[in-house]
Image (tube, rainbow, N blue to C red; front, top):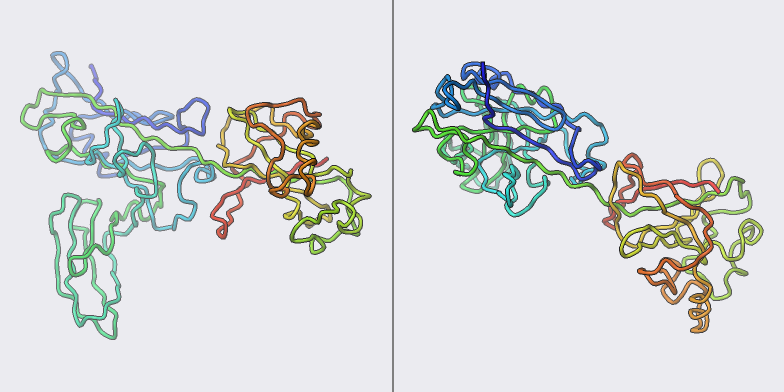
Length: 417
């Protein structure tokens, strides 16, 4: 018995050095499993996607003609609890949301048949998120009108339900009943305006998976995404669909902690801005605890082209719960997370010759821009600084800190010195 490829899915993730994602376990839905069996198709899962095959005879002709319009739905279960941490995706997903993919959107880029909603964009994004609903639920809304026209449409824009819903005291409610239909993507409109796009499925609503993929065998599928010709049972064109996920970039924040406690030093004592007579006017206990040139004369260098600097930001120094005190060094720009460690990240002194040039201009010894800016340093030249610590640890996706006020995401790395 010979089986040939009908369609497949490959998932890539830039976080992994291999480029291939092993972050999902994919299974067909109950209804999809029945459709596959009735069509004589075989589902084969693998570590970075899946493959659907058909039974062939006389070369590539399918033994069972694939002429009916149908849909095959597959559930994506995430294998790692920290998947969103290292993926360039919204961190604030609600419980009743799901990533939705299908082969109805023409988003071909070079040879890749992408399944994401945003055309011209290579990666999965927040635009692929839908509300997840059971197939029967009560829809509640607010309106200043006395009644509202409610309309529900399927994925092809066909109206499957409409009603005039009365509004009392600014609130309306309507029982949505879709169990007579196959699970899928629907839109709900109020007075013609889009109110919600959702995926209705009792099975998925119970499981709360990461995502769902609907592969349509339908005339509405773009030609380059079609794997069958509904008018010619023998015409099979195997399709390889692609899902790409970008890795997250964060501001790396190294927190250098001395291994002894500073009982006389309090985070509230730190000035809002550094004085010109640094370090003499810093809080009591500072001069005895640290060298005179720490941290202003030091920098972390991340080996890239150009070199990325992580500069000391002592204004953000903080006392830890265990009594130790931490001084942060923060990257000038976001850096990518990866499961492959970057070697050569080093804490080093700044170049003496550049320090002298900066000091001759006057101002505090970290330069005119304050301690958060690298001074006297050419990003394309590593210089001959004194290496204090070589091969610092890399950022981990498990240590994200979201700063909503700044609109930034930090990765904290604690280093005890």
